[in-house]
Length: 536
Image (cartoon, rainbow, N blue to C red):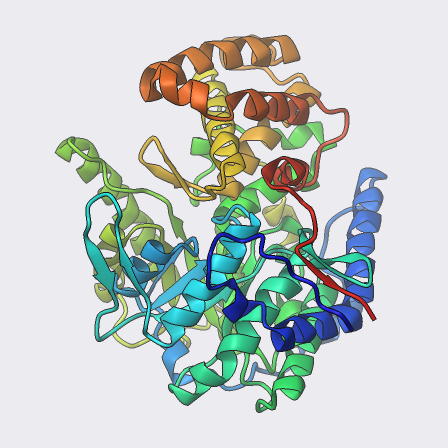
């Protein structure tokens, strides 16, 4: 085995992460699990073809014994038993410090939707996580000269690796790109698992975009192999699974069962779930969604999904985490800021009253709002005793199309968000504040898939106009003028708007819906020359 990793990363501490032993560990996981990983992606494609041919989404009769069985997940560690407020964000140094200091119970460091996977972002993110675990992380802003360091009390760290669909082209093993999930999880575990355990915590994960229990089985086996290789007690790794795809909504019990020795709970990944609803039902003209702002958590299909998460989790002794509040403070407009915060408060009150054990926010300013809402209706650390036996969800309820209207402003918002997010992502920024919301890849996915869906099925706006390619192209031209007035001509010239518009149009106009915009954009993001090459 000959690891070769030329100095391609500007971070002068890259060699602390890309050590020969760490590289060998990731390579070991890759050799053992990459063949099954490829089979999982092939199985996804097979299931999609079946849906296109008329197969119906439903609960699997073959796994009914698991759904009906009397079983629970393994014991959950003490620092994961109170998760009232969790904050999420990218893995840049300042964000990690602020999130850990935010007063939240847990912080999910996100290598997936909130991080554009440039080589420098990924390696520097691992450096930042390593320093945070050892409490040596510090940062001085080069513009303001303000210094940042960890407080005495910080949030519990959790890490979200990339989804199964994303490769890591900068590292190859035996000539093949390493799955991004194994690169992110492998490096985190190798450098931090023992240190976290010695400090009284553990290696905790969020697992994104699972579609089926066989994918959870794969992750469970990865965890077992990692525990054995690193000399860890079996089951010390814990994972919370994001239920953020429509197929996974029919597999909740099965996913927890597959991961039960490593499972800590399920989370309602609302934005990706809406994206998946569109993508999974792309060929169904009866599943046309209204404007994305109208697809709220009070829609019947969203209520069915979130309440099923609570019932499933509590029956199995696992935590049911609520969805993301993506609002950010509205500067210089107290009235608008009050309205935004009141929406967050109402959302969190709904979650706690339904029985969720905790929730997500995207900005430190929302931590107190969410905590107050939960404190008003939850007396203990969690609500595992609320079994929600009144909840009985059918496939028809999960598949009910959200009601509402399609408007010109909804079309224009999709364009503004989609184009600006892709442009920022191509510059290496995966978490983008736009119009008082923190946008990540999930909301950009809604924007472009929704327009594809409207064009594909000739959807009508509320004024009677049909959404066509020509209409979308004209709106893009008009919205680029608006964006230019908002951010300035120089910023428009220096950015990557030409690439972003071309890609956005290609995605909206494609004959077949692209599975993920990040896959389509990946070759435009970074030079994909392998930096780490492992050969036998």
